[in-house]
Length: 121
Image (cartoon, rainbow, N blue to C red; front, side, top):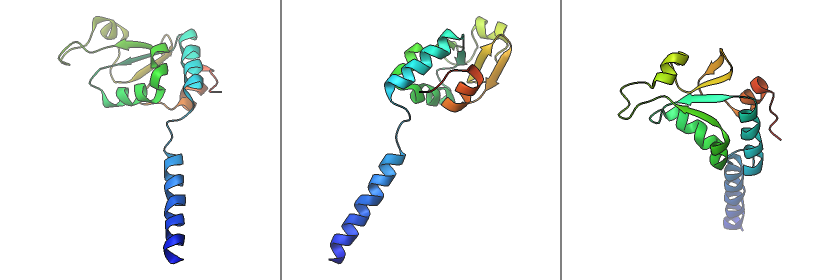
């Protein structure tokens, strides 16, 4: 009886942990959100070697293809592309919402939605 209760307890805790580790909204919602960002001209400037940029890409999952993205690093990671130099990009990721209106760092869906006006639903 005690072993059975322990097993049930472990299963309940495991379910709670797994449920809390979901990757966010469903893919269809992420895709609609990413399309909205693109339609509103939101762009992420990043670098292939940037771990925070990789987190942002992973957050969107398959919907990442819908996001306007500008790669700022040249092969080898030692220099920046001309477009990013001209845009004055100094850190990665940098999200541009309108010319000159930028936020740097990893942003949540909620932060992106609040800044862009796109709804995550």
